[in-house]
Image 1 (tube, rainbow, N blue to C red):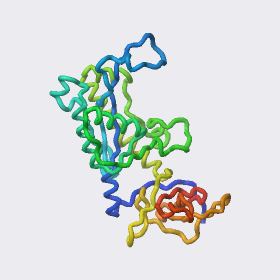
Image 2 (image 1 turned 135 degrees about the vertical axis):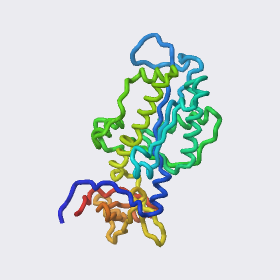
Image 3 (image 1 turned 180 degrees about the vertical axis):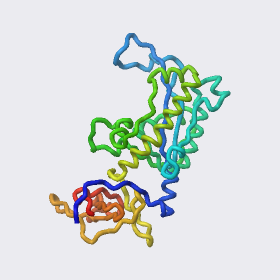
Length: 296
């Protein structure tokens, strides 16, 4: 038996109905937001007080793009959906920054989702739900947020920007654009700028966010061993069966024992996040047992 250090390719077990349902309820989301104008005495890096913001200006959504894990896995870039302020012609003509139409679409997407995947999700979720609050809307049904930025915490690299990660790990890159002039064009109601912004937004879903997720999913620590009763125990990320091994893992420093689960499909082993004596043991939270390596 030789030791391989290569991580296997991530392939969800789509034959199982509960995995299909999970993938259909998991949505990859990205938004693009508008500029705000402010009065300032000079250029350069400096703080701008809220009093300096032009009266009436507010950060709003320009475009949004999303796709379910199921659609992206099966149809690639064709599984991406998008919406833009300029899709609603009458409202756009009055105010190109009227994002009500975009927000209504997103509210429905979030309300039907069980998991939202985003890079730096605090930004996307914060602005989306902040705008819901501005408009006096209720919050969508509760959903879990999976942030590809935060889940890579502790795995160091030069940068955790999505464009860098996609180029380094996959060989893809974000759609190029002219920078600030694109946002200025959108602020001025230029339809061509909105078209370009929507294209840029769409590119953030499949070729970058989704592919970074698929490339890094087996490295993250937010994994659960889900007990389906008589159907056995399954991995919450891959959907494959987990075998509870007879021999526990022993921490050599503390002497504490931890249950060990094995995923035969990937030849990976995980340990319970809590030791056997803990009241939380058996809650299903597991973490990759890196010390075992991959055995082939």
